[in-house]
Image (cartoon, rainbow, N blue to C red):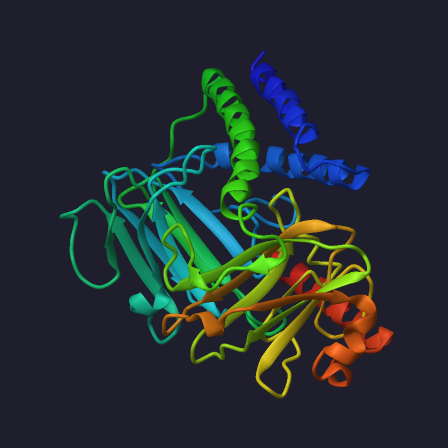
Length: 392
């Protein structure tokens, strides 16, 4: 049967989920099985979108296909390439805080990450007054001039990221891709053999995807001291003008983590965001809970700093970051579209204190307080903004 290999891969994937070292509670397992469902959907989507001669941008990750500590503030798209062909990307710039492009020479695996061959944001391209643009990607010698980029040897995937700082007012743009000379033609019809091959590839991709992103944080996060965060540093993988700070936490329910960071400001970083991730290395529920905040969404203190309060219990504060039952998890800051390098004093300071001492130890505590009605309005705004974005 054509689907037999994929069915066997699903069974193997479930074994990987159930045997993950961090699975300790029913919630851990339930979230793992939910992660598995999203991974099944995503791998089928990616394999069926694989056509290097007739490519299109597919959604790489989203609320129900999470992967690789996905950023709640980002729309991710990818298209597959071949390094000996020329591709045309056309679009219209929206009003989001950042739009960036990256060419990779492969995909992630349990033993390696792909190399970034090209990475840039829209400051490096010419955009017309009406927001429209056209980019060309091709092998060396295919042409020169503005908005032309060379596909290095092994180029396999083009990724586009559109990042929101203000979920409510910013709007995404438009983006399309085609292989030069292919418009007006059509691919050959599929065969049963080709469909069976796709199921086989999807199965291998599913198992590799789960193993990869269970191993990745073991190398990059869990080797750090618990309840700390790194200094800001260029994000691994070659992303253009992005810095990050990472860590992992382990907190009792009567403990809170206060993370203090300067507001970078739009002149330095139009996008600055913080989020929590589960031990599955994916974002927590950012639609119905405040598990992330951009600098624009957070309430800054008069001293120009944001103080995030990571807590299981509700402290009644505007910058409460909800753990949603996760005793352990990952911490992540991102700064994007930077105009300068970040220094250690641009990064976070972390302190763990008893929940009962928040009022006396948190600077500007009274200014940060919110009522239950105000909190409900914040969550309603998140729900509405994500629903609108998903239709964009």
